[in-house]
Length: 124
Image 1 (cartoon, one colour):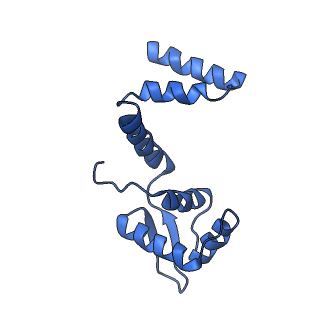
Image 2 (cartoon, one colour):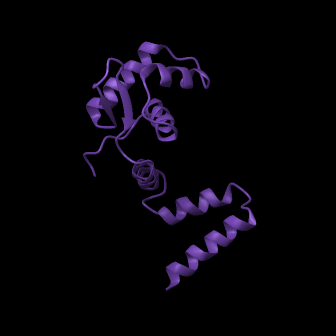
């Protein structure tokens, strides 16, 4: 997994859009990104070209208009980002990272139940 590319913030934004709805054209992604922030069509195209080369997206060239899909699953990227953050900011402790994350919000009763179930599974 050390050779797997780590997406930039801009690339994560594109991946997020693809995970929500794919396949997508450059124009689709440009339009959807434009709802979030100002970005040029060429910037989106350049990012997709870099992402294709890095293996973050796959490009389908069967039709005149190329379409893109996310290559890794969301969970794969989330795990790599989580591990990187734990390693760099929390001394490798995923528990400390999780505790910090949990301390920033007031969880709902359902979230607390889910957390308790996870704790109970870990104790077994």
